[in-house]
Length: 142
Image (tube, rainbow, N blue to C red; front, side):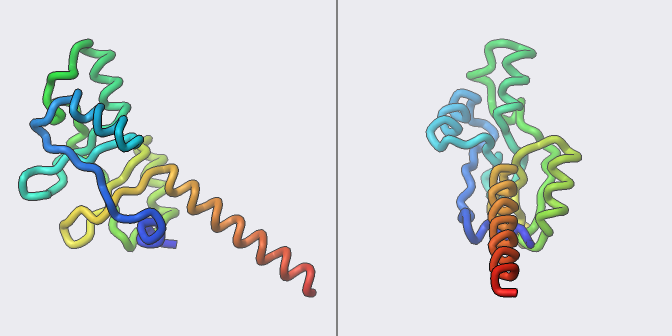
């Protein structure tokens, strides 16, 4: 199974924010959209980083009053990405090894979606359910 299958189900909309916007702005978007990360993009639409809830918590723990600081100060600039053709098992390995929960999807140098660990778990559960149903049908018809 490939990442494109997850995107086909969940959609390709990605919540983004510019690097000059404040952490307060980012928190408002995260809350409003009920998500855990924002992709930070430049004026040209290129991915510059990712800002997760964890990044914000670390910033608050380290410095206290960070809400007026720019997103660029606390974003993760070294972003690990995947493509629509990336195998989901490879995606899971990268997320587990890197200990992160969100991965932007890049297609031909453009942001094409984002996949969360929750999306991966949901997809895997659906696969298991289909396999279980197929086995049950096989057993009852054999």
